[in-house]
Length: 459
Ligand code: PMP
Image (tube, rainbow, N blue to C red):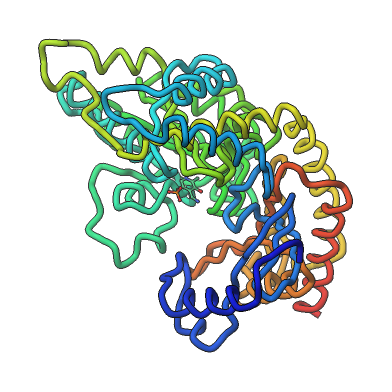
């Protein structure tokens, strides 16, 4: 362990956690008897748990967030200085960090002109849904209010974001959900829905079919992840994005790209959509924006959209009537500025490209060795390894088996993630998204841990 706190503090925190904290995404019954998993310190891409064990974190804080790694004192110092100067002001007045970061962020996103500040990925997506609905109300007599989303994509945890989510198991038991969200098919070629040569074009054409079925004048926006992250690391096939863009233009549908995972360097460019030559109308981002040093998310959009909200100053409803208290906290944008400085100073986009290629090569080598790997896919430092019982039938392995792989990696000191679907027919994929600072040696350790775990679990 590096410098971590005294043992009494730790054991009492572990007890307090067991007794009082309701954790995200966890079934709590087994925790009553198991040893709690608490992370107490981080440095670079290593974290230490309450027992003093060191782990290499290949999932950037559990859910692909800590892009610049742990222990960044330049971010902490910038946040501290700003909070002492001015911690917060919201609503009617701007702040210096908010203004400076907006310009800096937009300099990485040619074609976009405005930034709206909020606090989480869910909230950012919700704001876009509201913007789309208001544009429909003001400019299309309420008709263009439907929002399309793609099977397997995820856009957040609120009721509207669940309604726009392509993973139905996440929404189970939380209905009724808001109306007007319509699903289009996924584009995962590994699990083909059409037997055609140009799969990307076919999958995009499926979106047009939904638009025509719904009535093109009723569809306001199409919301997509550039690369589906939590739904199985799905990279749209060649031809998909140009066709999607064409379809959106043809039917005057706003294109909303959810960069909550892919944004801020994860794929080796500032944004995932920048691999595909897309011109979005909205981009939402959160996780890597301040790498978890502060809570911040953003909607970026065009002046074309922005101007639709100031069409009639005499009308009290002609502006975006939305607020989010902590959109006015200066810790977010000041942390995001220094986060971006670090990515530039340390050439982390370039490192992501190089290390992403190395990780990919290693995973492909594992596929040649382990029959249980059905598919390897991803871009940059966002890579997935789909596990199947049989490469011909492509039947997924069980959730227990995937969890065992994750557990064995952890026993070997490497934290990886897994996507499990309780529903039949959906994929079971190991997820790798290490901080963008990862080194060659650390890539090799990650791949070795997976190699060992697959060997042990599927012996
Ligand atoms: N969009 C995507 C693509 C996500 O992966 C997530 C979270 N994993 C969200 C939105 C929601 O973000 P948050 O948890 O910050 O609300």
